[in-house]
Length: 153
Image 1 (cartoon, rainbow, N blue to C red):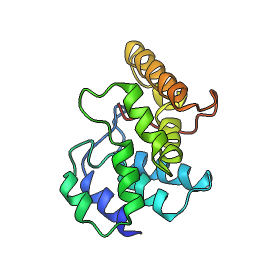
Image 2: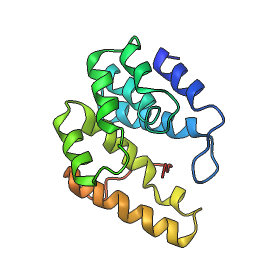
Image 3: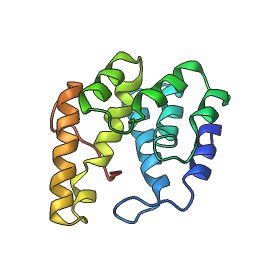
């Protein structure tokens, strides 16, 4: 287990996704999705940590002081949504940060998996499907390239 994985697993201990699954499964799937897409160790570390600050599991101060590369920290910050932030600004920050698009692509693929979305009520499933499709469009990702088994919001 890498240090980033250990920190992420500890930070998200007890958290579940909307399907009631342990949140660490989402983190593992995103990290594996980054690896399968050719991501490097810095991107895989960012994948493990991609929701830690956004979900309030770790403070931004931790991120700044952690034994991570600057690039890993930058990727985590890029994929961390800010309260009230328009999707266009969020997408622009991801696109402007080297290495962040691959992490977000793996995150969206896991979040949008139809098998995982199927366990949700219809209204939530529709809302999330539309949300993820819009973000993929803003990021210039080809539709239909979603991956396996997850959901976050």
